[in-house]
Length: 291
Image (cartoon, rainbow, N blue to C red; front, top):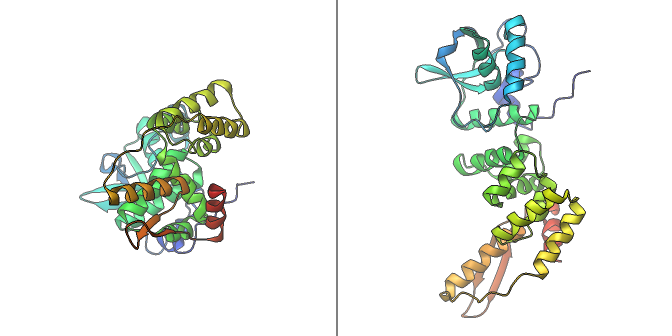
């Protein structure tokens, strides 16, 4: 029995139309608003903003062998751009078709804006579980930064809770070596989220290596993080200009709580701290950090 496809969220169906179920073989005439055709492989190019960066060579070869025998059963989803066809969904099939030596591939041509193309590409990869956690986090951040999406809109589009999205994006705060460990599966996201409790990058990286070397459980990792915090050496406070000190404190709180924090001064040494939240789950998560 085929695996049940995840919900796409309100609004995304209008982007994909009836081709949203990308696991289903395309049959029959072109759907309204689509154009299916055979195009030269050399005219098809990958999307440079494609969230997926890594492709398993062995799996690509298996798909290429299947394509050699049966052809490309499921058309690529593309959009016309600057005299060529840019892939919105189906880069893996395109790569395998090249390996199989095909000259033409079937495509469905759709009209997408830059933001819509980014959303559809992200959805396809998430549905197929093709993205590693770091690629997924980078894709979320790109939609937020470059296309002005809010976390609320992203949550609705992806049918994911805002807490899940926030926690995934927090992985980008990991030092580069640790991000690499999460990306290749050496370190689980559960372990990585616990390790974010260590603010010193060097100490966090060393702890991550210890977790992997000793095959520590998440609970054991929590103990490791608490121990590291207890042994944290005292450092001299930086002498900062008054406002810079408050800005630095707000940034540190924001990093720890995983949400926006503002410090508003009423006078020289008095004011208030504002902590943004977006749901009851967010409040509970913030309270856990404060406790």
